[in-house]
Image (cartoon, rainbow, N blue to C red):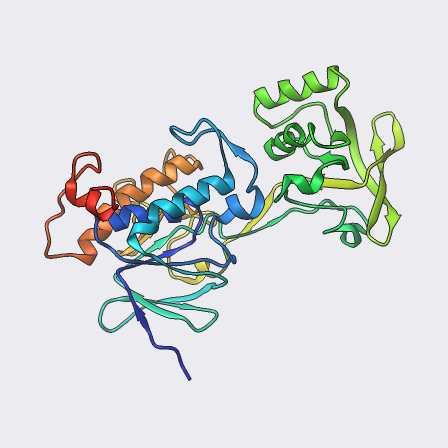
Length: 342
């Protein structure tokens, strides 16, 4: 038996921070949203890859964890009663005879909406794995590509491999709770923030962190229990004792079904204008990391700005006969009533 088609004003594809803030901005303008995400929970990369990692560039929040940011955004959107569909992947996007957009997911869910907001980050993502023989046998027990709970690494003997922000950030954050921690990079130059590199080198100078230059060539241990790693350095081969390895080699982004929706693409990103953040297809918007335009910065705060301007244009599609009245939440009693603070 087929499911009944659901109707709403806007479908937001992606429940990451930018998608969640879009729900808030759309709600302020009386637009109802259904949100679809392939993950089993909200938050996108923030929740899936670094829920406990501190974020420092969210306005008015000097430091906030990925999970706390997601929780705050969920609370902010709550007054508008959005409907969330987790574990769903959008497979098709087509125009109905009535002029609506019909979204169909891999689970047979169909939603008709006036406007579509693609906030799918970089699409689906998976970690780049180092070419180490037999590494798969240790994944999930001794080798991890993300830190979801810092407490899981308390007291461990950790080897972190990489030279970017993730490698340096987790080196600094895990160092106080690990039994021992070592950082391995192929060369003595790092792609991370200068402040992080300075803090890392200070720990090395203080004898609280081991820095190695080279590459992992083999892993030692049986039954998924890691005992050490073989290293090839500039001075020859040697072994490092460790029970945990965190390789941070970046992410491979796969646009997935988005590539088949008929949108113009540029290097697997969706071009938009900077007035409405609308795609080449009227009624379909792209915000956050999945879009591209001159001067684009892949920052969460940039996505928030894009969501606000997108909502202004979406209103014109959902309510074509109404005049859009711009209001401030600080002074508008009607907006405060919607938010439950009047």
